[in-house]
Length: 227
Ligand code: XBP
Ligand code: MG
Image (tube, rainbow, N blue to C red; front, side):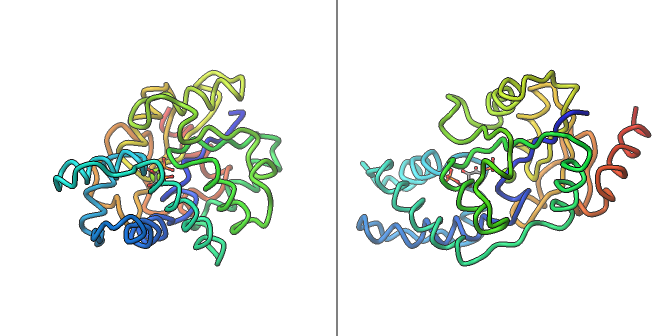
């Protein structure tokens, strides 16, 4: 194993409540009387990508033409301010990252969210620029097809210069598991607040919490036992 590839939202940290708050705070500025409660947002989360989510909701509610790009830019501005107030890593993520660094592995992010949001999360959670947390960042519109398409994980592998068997992916959602598996990666799933009811799908290993893995050594042992 030469690299760990992390999904961001719901995996590195539980960020979706902040995304939901940012969406809801942005709507009034565009004269939209929308409010996404948790159950509405849970349903909308099956559509990856904030712009795609807005577009879907506009279609489903017959809202007509909505300035999706401008609305999403405002939402991103609000999200980066919200996350800057602080965010904690999901249990086990910090240990996995530290162990990987100590063992000379590289770290990558493979996420549907934007590079700006990855930057904001790294500043808030690590007090570091994203480039000092991840060696490689594959994010948002860097790929044409978002999760569950494999594109973002294939980009991460390409940027790492690695074959799928040389890395492991970490995910929280069914769309993410499908994306990683279709890219040929083994994937460790730990479902979170918004994805607990989702199917495990083709995850190589499913844990309630990443801290169950016991760091990189524990993960390696678990994977060897599966082989
Ligand atoms: C989850 C997503 C993202 C976020 C919102 O990304 O689907 O769309 O919900 O971020 P991940 P944007 O692959 O990290 O789980 O509004 O920037 O898309
Ligand atoms: Mg996720």
